[in-house]
Image (tube, rainbow, N blue to C red; front, top):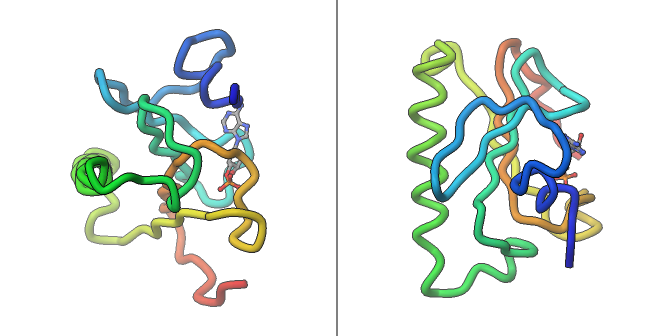
Length: 113
Ligand code: AMP
């Protein structure tokens, strides 16, 4: 499996990087749905939420730590933000590489679906 996020992580295609360390990259979504729309992507490949192994669940808490840091850095921790993870077709997943959306910067529509 070679997705667009593999290419972004490997710097084969450009992206607007907000944060990067040895385990994660955070990029700005190319088609933002809010003034701030980030994608938090682990560098170790996992296809979907379903594929997170029992020994990999720590990735979720690591993502949440990044969320907290980003929220403060971008000064939206008090105004608020929305986190979304889409899984498989009915969930709206289009890129089969685990990622979390971080949306902020305006009051988002409360309705889903
Ligand atoms: P999902 O539908 O949850 O799989 O989300 C995939 C997201 O990746 C969408 O919001 C796209 O706009 C975004 N996306 C697709 N290609 C790129 C890219 N080259 N750089 C940044 N974001 C992208």
